[in-house]
Image (cartoon, rainbow, N blue to C red; front, side, top):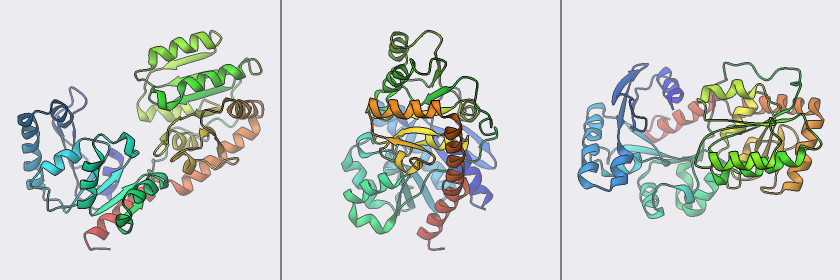
Length: 350
């Protein structure tokens, strides 16, 4: 969101950010690029379900909104700010756009609460066609005030992957280590290919509740020295890591709402093997920029992995195609521009 905020300011917008106080030690208030950033412990107050704690975090939000007087409030449905918005008297008469980042099954509140939000929203955006279709199926009456706005990423500072293949193939899986991401499947997949590609290495980047169990599973399934776990890295550190790998695997077992990892890989010129589900299907042109494969089908994934590792030049060309595809369709300025179009439309300036 920092980059989106910077871009909106560059286009002449005045922006104030109210966000959750999730990271201990960060200041409750600071300014960046002329934008006031206010951190309020919303999640803690809601988790406690303590009326006085909720009132305590609502009051400063009331003051911020009353002082700034925004024309539009942009809410994100994957966080606690939507609760505080509905509790805030100052915000009730202000136009707002609601952005969907996650399937209904993963919303941090009930569907009845979501329906209440939708009824009051000026516009609803979704980060993928998959999410938008699910939304319209539930709210067909809102089809004329909703749209898909793909996430965009600024071009990374690091160069794309080296023009020559690495001496030993490196397969990367990156993300939060939770069951629905399929990291255990990635380990089983890599184990199935080891006899035919003994020099290949597996790099798993991420953290989460399954970190310890996945380490143990890898130790049981893979040859010593053939794999490495790296705990979560900052977003800006992902592209340099990807530039050193041969292939990224995204074996998600759930309907990924967007598929950010596929976008990061493509920017680095690295092809992906990805589950043909949710927003991932919009990120990969199967056979051109990577391969879309049935989730959990080890035989099909095994064949695709071996082909990619045994044909490095063809795999490299797929990476080049992936970079061209995302630069054309998922440019950062395109994302910023589409949100700006919505802001202008709902305020009657379009």
